Picture 1 (cartoon, helix red, strand yellow):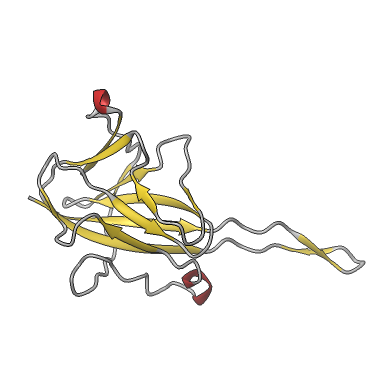
Picture 2 (picture 1 turned 135 degrees about the horizontal axis):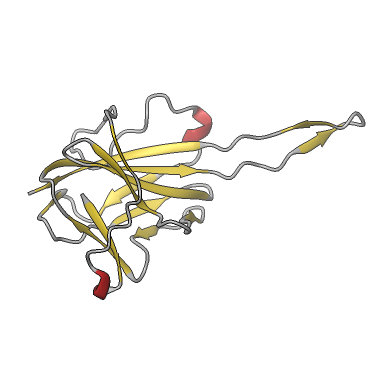
Length: 166
């Protein structure tokens, strides 16, 4: 479990407002650091260019340690970070309720945001972060004199990062 805290005085504040239990199909690469993109991802979604990395080469953390990650996208996107903990509980980590995390193209974003920290907590075992990027949907456009409209849908990409809590 990751606990997000705003300012040192609130170090135990849990921003996770939602917990959903269930199975999630996990995919990871040989080192377990940067997980592969979802196999169901469309070529259009791959154009988001989502890359996410943890703050250390060995993704092992002790309870209470801070965790940081860096996210980069090739296109402007909104970011959500979810955690699937060792017990199978899925919780939203970031952004906090009422906030957004928006990337700028090809500009690394370090999470958590300034003034906040993410501390690793129980349960011990292998957990997984799900970093989801969504592009904004384009505005509707009219075609010809008949006024027919079409809507562009937003794109979605996901990267999963495994880490161990000791």
